[in-house]
Image 1 (tube, rainbow, N blue to C red):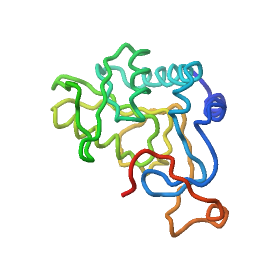
Image 2: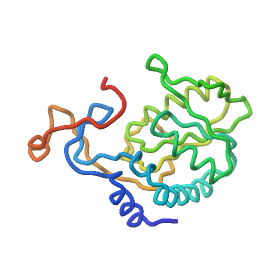
Image 3: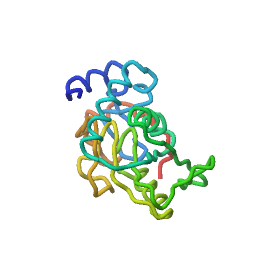
Length: 194
């Protein structure tokens, strides 16, 4: 398993962890931004992180037969973990603003589902995936991600297994520290602000 130091080094080297002034998909502002797509675009680094996360998942969740990830961020991470763990992997997509299963993906009642994301901040996408699992009468065994930056404030109340936990401060637009307000904000995320 990779150490925290080794994992952070990889995230910085791949530009998956950058500094500046960012508007997150939640609408909050942050001095750091995580873009796991940068990590996943570099397979020799991505495989190291995913193998380490897979080991943690195996230590924590023994019995699951399906990985469900939210599109877009979780698709590649879910696929890589599915490949390493030899578990079927599917993903949900937004249709009219709501996650749905498409492409003839199915969840059966007997399925035990692990929900996998790239980054968990508010837990919103994971909880939307949870609804899909519940609507299909299946069971959720847990949640996993490369980076958990929720700092205990996620909508997810169950255990989250992550490769890295980061406590990155976030601020509302009206409560920015002076240092952050002096930097032009950019919105690198993929979901429209609410």
